[in-house]
Length: 190
Image (cartoon, rainbow, N blue to C red; front, top):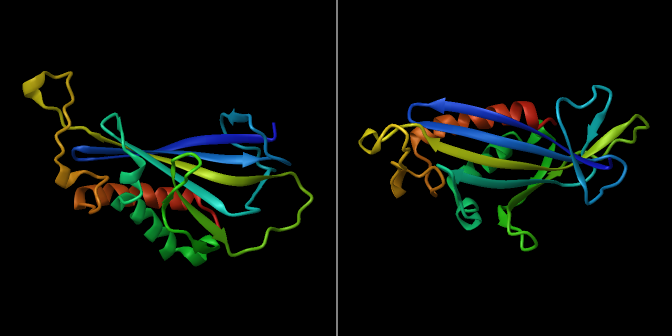
């Protein structure tokens, strides 16, 4: 099982909006492989997690069940919000450099790269190497349009208040702040 992944979610509901952040940590043990085994539950307590090279964050998103294009995500206020939060906490996270957001030509996915400010420790205990973290921002409008029937959820957002726009509006920002704080606290450890 050289390559493996673990997933978790953070969900915040506020007013008419719900944001679920799906987080997938991608690791390898000894050497990377093409086959990635999904681990359910927690990693063993005695397994150290190291960052032996740059950490790649991939970003994707959906709005009311519709995937958001990567060229929208790369320019969105959501992506810039994450980058700004990491930059603000750069020293505490042990990060030396943050790349600009970019769309990887190899797979067409929005990414940013974090370079560690620390050299990898030499340890003999069992350890896994963290390679990347995949982040999927899933926004849902929780308000129902009752004129269309109770089962039909209609997208009531205009282009001006889309959470993936280039400007982040206050209702989205408060939800995003809560999710980002939890992600930074529990998933990015310096």
